Amino acid sequence: MSSVICLLLQIYSLLILVRVVFSWFPVSPNGTAAVVSGFLSFATDPVLRPLRKVLPPIRFGSALMDLSPIVAFFGITLLQNFICG
Image (cartoon, rainbow, N blue to C red; front, side):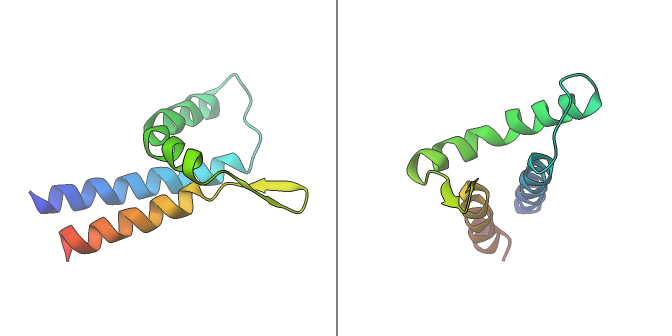
């Protein structure tokens, strides 16, 4: 059972990473990339949205930097270390 949870945590980390990479590029509203981006948002928002409320994006020069994926990675890593060993 723990191996299944470990695999799911790894997959979720990968989804967050892919979402971060997708956020660096403009996505056309029509096409496959928009569908993938929508799925990534749907899958990762339940974790990232509450983190953004606690830790809003910070200004980094003229851009905003969202730290919620970093915090989520840290939390998932802690869970993996605790559950998976």
